[in-house]
Image 1 (cartoon, rainbow, N blue to C red):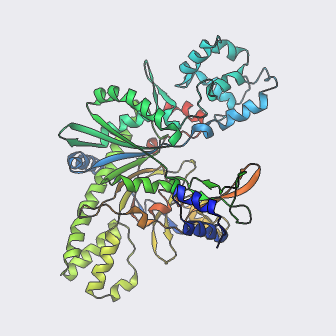
Image 2: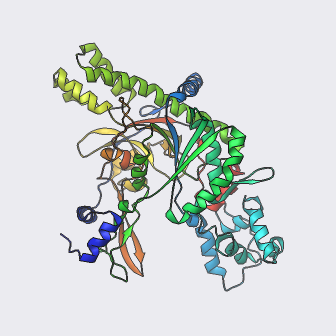
Length: 521
């Protein structure tokens, strides 16, 4: 037991965290997290489905025909600040703030795509260039002259600092991503455009596009003001009405920080230090939506209109396949609920679970009597379901699809991050080498049961997964605890299906120079 003062207990009550949670988290720091036990890579041979052209057309049609019967929403984690996008620019400012930049800085023979040099060489191609040019002009400066005179630090500072465009402080959602003929779009606008083409419902008031953004508290007013200004334009463009909702990551999902001896870390005022629990905390936000069908996509994975067609098609493919599987699943659940099944019925359900839903049916299942078999199948099928798009691995960082054995020796399909793998184990490394796909965070989720009631998504988290990282505060080292990731351990006990999707549907913006890629121009 840790010793908590009266002030500590008041602090816990304020943020909604119990003493038991603190004890569990500190115990987790002491024990650490076990590596994922990979048994095989999910590939097109087993674990990942690839649809033919005819199947794609059929699934798109099914989605378009059936979506009117579902409550659909698009869920976009959008609270992250953009500061990490500009890490190289911040380093550049620190290096050259008080010294001259070499005259040949932008005239080297070989310049890497992710370099600061390439940023300045391509600066006119960024969607924010005109805003930057205008802001500098209002201060009596000409950006073209500044580029000629190597006044690059001043340009970078104006882009990043609050006195300029403040891009270093804004969330990614509110950065200009793409240029069009006579205007430019924020990342958030591209999600509005996408939503109008698949995450819609039909009501008495017309076609409604539902979108939910998770935002940080400090940015919520700016989000709301920006969206309010944008909506009339896109509602007219797509003849839809938008229903936009927001949520913040709950303080109660923060995790305690500890020192290197696993004792609670305290700030200069003696208060306990808590840190955000990572994107896994958003399972609470997802749970609160109480929606039937939820599309999930990261804020920075968007493309200009000229490349959206494939993305929209495959969103409908994933959604159509979810509808198809769920309709069959619900039929079987009703049969299991009513009981009195013939042997052939049970065998049919077993085949569907094993061959279509990739659910492991253990050998001891055959030793069960009829009631035990029905109970087993009911428990396995009556769960949330997700269809996950997977792209061919072409060297991008990210988690991948694998068959994983849990602590109960049960194997299932999981999305596993690189940090969750034991790279010192030769067998695990061999499995990793056989991997062909990785996770672009392209999910469509069914979160209600066959009776129309929402699942409690917190019941399906594998709490034995997570991550411990080292950070610092006030010049002192600390350890931070990240909760099981939203699409990793937080969805570990969902029915999971992997589908092969084209690489063009994955265009993340992790650094500012990614916006210079052809897919963002």
